[in-house]
Image (cartoon, rainbow, N blue to C red; front, top):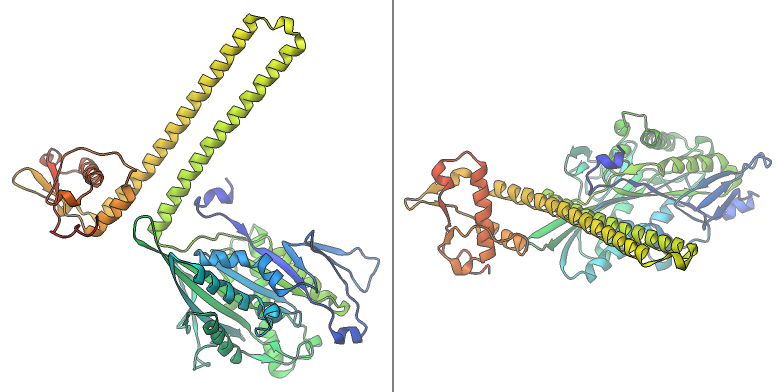
Length: 545
């Protein structure tokens, strides 16, 4: 049995998507005489890295889901590699986009870009536009968008939107939502402009500093979190809520102290940055190793926060940023190897919704799977029979038309009829299997629904031999929309104070449900032989239809 077989049918494994982006040589690098050691082939997703100290050495080749060279556009990157993930978040999935790479390779430019220039907006600002454009087009859904912003500075969590920036935050975990930050400031945003202001406030509080490699080097890992709640009326008339969460992660750059010239406070920052990135690498290695029984998520705050993003309930895209200059060969090689391991991580994304909605969705998926399986088998058998019949006729013609007498033709006709009869029997059996499976699913669903809302002690025996079953109007509404045209009428053994307000199909269905419930429970004999009456308060159903 494979890992996929062990998962619920509604939860399938999905690999982390990895893309690589290479910035152009800087003016400083050109002035110092550095050469490009990178060749990129976007049509094949291939990156070639040459060793500048040994030109005879074969190039090291890596393939990824997508690659972008120095001429790539911000919007092309977003449309091709990130738009689908954000669409999934709007549908209730968790999503993570994170940029990894050496200091000065363009991570922050990729994630943020230049907000004031539309053509140079980065992933985060394009996400803002995407989300609120989608909401503006929606007609049957209501959305609530919330934003939070934090950084991990020297292994401490800092709320970038809090007035008290020094307050220490704690990581917590709940089974239903996973790892989260307790007391993290959250703002409800209703437009692109509002969420951009939230981003600007956080950026003003972020830790940055100057090094030899980067004049404005990020000294912390930053995570901008967007939570999207969608409320939508379902076929049952009830509101269904889905919650998607998008983590936009700008990791601090991996550094070599000799190159960055970091001393004092900058050296301490670099040490913590490298430790957390090392912990992230250990998690990735453990996930793709296949033999590890323990994944070291707890080794750093960063890996704890990214626990769902790497091997858990999330759709994840990693963008590895590299520089082409020859003097950064070791760092570029390390980044490509890091990214090459990450593409083998398998996640298990699922829609975040109410458990009952999830169960119903799984039942619907199972019904669709069974129908598709039956259709596939029927078509396949039909094709095989047609090909075999043509082959037999061809053989007969080759042998000579004179040999194809009326007797062989009659035998051929009988054979075809026999095959058709066998095929019909197969289809009937398959249809019966699917019907039984569907009936079982519906039976289990409504049994669970009945058991969750109705308690045995609620019933009493009236003097005239009827059993009283008080049913709430909300349950009636749910049953009306759920069972309409699905279950055939049941026993005509029911009486109601307001029959004109109660649909006959619903009455029959509730009668069947209650009768089955009594037959499956140890109840007094007279209950099982009693008729059933459903009593409602006057007016309960007058406006329900």
